[in-house]
Image (cartoon, rainbow, N blue to C red; front, side, top):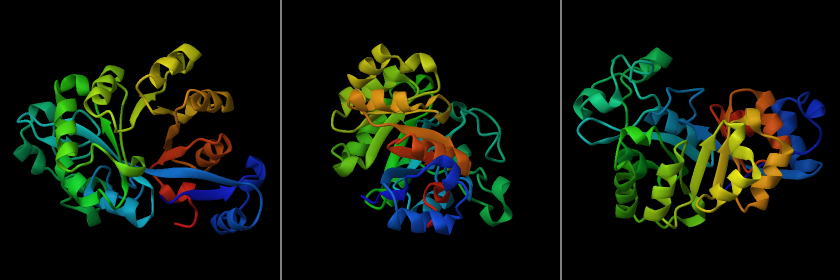
Length: 275
């Protein structure tokens, strides 16, 4: 598994470096730090989120993982889209759960990002698994699973059909804001790493972290609630920590200084300046 390394000196000095200087410093001086780069909805700073274009860009930029959002069409097809409605990222309107797969597939999911992306389609879960497994890690978020009863079993079945229910090197991870959904997923896929997502400080207490650690391998908070103490507590409970969503160099550097295990970002090159 490829890791990203950056120079481990103070924040103020590092922010003064150019990307080239940062990369050079990483390889020549100071304490080396390791972090996994997760391309959030693909490299969505550069291509329309949750499309093949964005996922291909994440691979091109040598991210360790692409992050995808799984929902379900009215007729039971697993599709990759973040919002529960198609309005923001397509030329259509309506809730994902109320649209057939053919309706969803007919939408343009790219032109809002630029003319060069005209005609990009909403991918299926199957397409993403088949195209990328073995090439890059896949961080799978079950988006609003409470809207889609039984979606955990459907996701598990797709992984099992591809022998991805026993992933090597944790290159398949499941995560959600819905903790009950992740408990179900853990029972269905006991060898697949599980992550819990939160932006709520109430989920960072020692008691809460111990509960998460009983079924989860990753505690993945928004960077606004990350502290050095939290990172240490997560590690003490035997979990890793991937934080989101980085859209600035300053946020990336902050998380690097916090010694998180992974950074979920729209811009993979903000974490690894060599790309």
